[in-house]
Image (cartoon, rainbow, N blue to C red; front, side):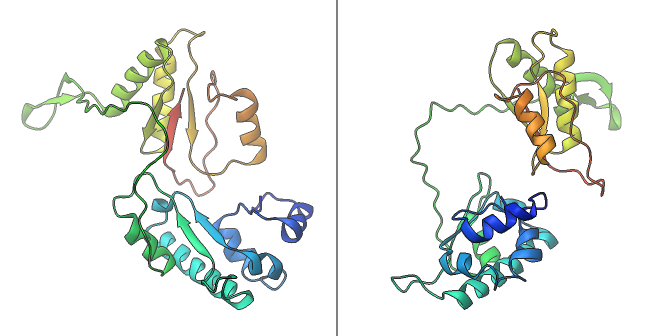
Length: 243
């Protein structure tokens, strides 16, 4: 691991010995690429770069990441332009479970031709899709039209029912605040012994925060676990509620 929380000793060890490095675009931009001469051994061996959740790199931030990846390509080419078979390095692997046009996204981020891999050969159980329309309420909106129950309220109700039936469930919510609201409403609908629902945000946790989550919730279930604090910028991130 090479991120803002890594100690100096951990960073030195990673630079000298790591075969696999987990890092962020920010650390790549701020530390690894400017000091690439110190990382020459690592960059000369770098064969694969895996960009997880690549659909998240969009807009201005995505443009910055695209430039960082191009810098990475130039640095790797400087230290070792090709592998033993004469093929350019590194190979980029971009992963996303939601992109409709993964090839176009990969080309924009890396500046390279990309091949889409859309076939899933992994074993899995049966899958069913259901479209759920929240019921109408007595509330009235424009021109007296009846309003439907909110999606978050309906999701919290469904989540609570599934927990009562001991069904492991993930509820994907558009925002962290929405995930916290759904988790809170679902817990309120359950008995104390059943309230195994927690809000979990996407992104990286600090060691003390993520470690606490893992200790209290090794299987993804927690009772009354407080939501993580907001970032200093006050921005919200996509989150999901897990039970």
